[in-house]
Image (cartoon, rainbow, N blue to C red):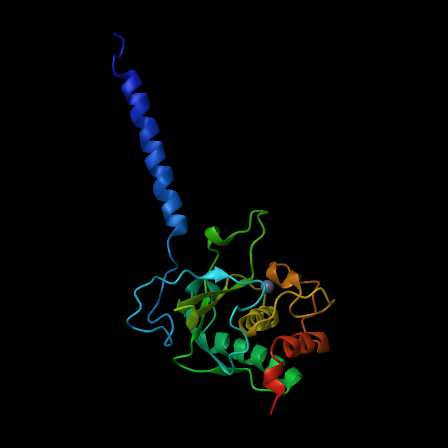
Length: 223
Ligand SMILES: [Zn+2]
């Protein structure tokens, strides 16, 4: 006997597929997961959900120093202790500060720049299939056209050894204070630091990186 309901079944299958696709796309667009307070500077009265966006061009609110950072999350899969994660970022911050000669970062337990080590999140893969080593993201909150607060975040996805982690950390910290990517060979802000494979790179905060920072944040040297 022929199944009279076959067309109906086909329609229901298509509807089910559409529903599944829709829920999937919603998941991909869902806000980032949040552990604890996003940032101490976000007003409690604000009920807008911050949408953090990648800022490869550097922070839209640069030169906020010293920028307090904290290790907010280290996925177990990294096999990295919080202390080691903190030490790597400390080292990266010191690279900048030694080169620039001004205080730029401070490690604070309630720092407004949380750093999250997120292991191998497929949603963060780039279209070309390569994977990001790290990312700086932020959301700028406006009140009556003025910036009322900034939600910042650094995500670390991949690194091969602690030296490479320091490089990725220095790169993302550079974005956080306002720097975009550099085309100067050997620059810690070089776009190659976005990629996982840093084996060819010798990361350093170069004089050119400090010059870039000076042009973005001249006031930091006005003492
Ligand atoms: Zn970058």
